Amino acid sequence: MNKLMRDGFGRQIDYLRMSVTDRCDFRCVYCMAKNMTFLPRQQVLTLEELQRLAALFVGQGVRKIRLTGGEPLIRPGIVELCRNIAALPGLRELVMTSNGSQLARLARPLAEAGVKRMNISLDSLDAQKFRAITRNGDLDRVLRGIEVARGAGFERIKLNCVVMKGRNFEEVPQLVQYAIEQGIDISFIEEMPLGDVGRSRGESFCSSDEVRALIARHHALLDSTENSGGPARYMRLERHPQTRIGFISPNSHNFCGSCNRVRMTVEGKLLLCLGQDDALDLRGLLRRYPLGDQPLIEAVQQALRRKPWRHDFNPEGTVQVVRFMNMSGG
Ligand code: SAM
Ligand code: SF4
Image (cartoon, rainbow, N blue to C red; front, side, top):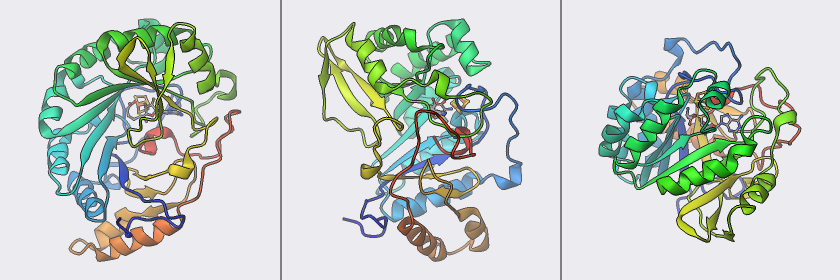
């Protein structure tokens, strides 16, 4: 086992989530405020810098990289970046989280570039509700993206759905049915209190236990010990074994004890925990040491020693971290 990427509690960190942009073509109500300002270009890591950091982390023992954002597919040069990262010796899998809006165009090039699995956000199957949640998303475009992605050659596709009372909770059974028909997985996520999105999150908070009880009214659910290397707990549907139902419950079922990941913002901040503010500025080091990685490696190892034991999200949704999710490599 690699000792270089151990944190102060002995947890092995082999999963890096990299944000490749803070920008997005959607403005989801749980992720962003209505009016957002984005980072100026010089503060954003270049493609070469992103690639250099990916190589550094893989060299230190990271085995899985997830590219995310913002919306990763609106970053120019994303397919080439994927191809270069996927080719890093030692990396087991390159995966991505996307809102699906660009997948009709990019799913095949991405699969061909070496992206193994794709998570696609889908919070509603009703065009109006979808637009209300994403503020400007086009449901048909995303559904077309999912269709193309299914034929593109990914090893697995999973839908991600943030469940909110009064917005999409009642739609959970239809979303499960859609995943069954498509032969893909679906995870239901509890909303996390990241950033001030201009409303109280407590009112719409919906726990994974409530979502599971609603699904259980329609399907026999079987416990599963499966793990895809992330925070989701999985269940199987007795009559539809090809579809896994995941629950990501940062508020109600703390999963920090088995945390194996760190996040990199597109400004090059290494976030040691999604729910805490402590971070290491790697952009400064990258630019100060253009030729040698050793100072960066030492700084990463020191930072890992201060990775906190856990986050402290609560269902009331009080803002504890001012950073928005699009800045966090969610
Ligand atoms: N734009 C891409 C997308 O939406 O899939 C990737 C970035 S997005 C920040 C990554 C995931 O975080 C999405 O599945 C989204 O639903 C989820 N997310 C965003 N804000 C969240 C919040 N406050 N609580 C829980 N999940 C959130
Ligand atoms: Fe964009 Fe994804 Fe955030 Fe929605 S969740 S605003 S799609 S980054």
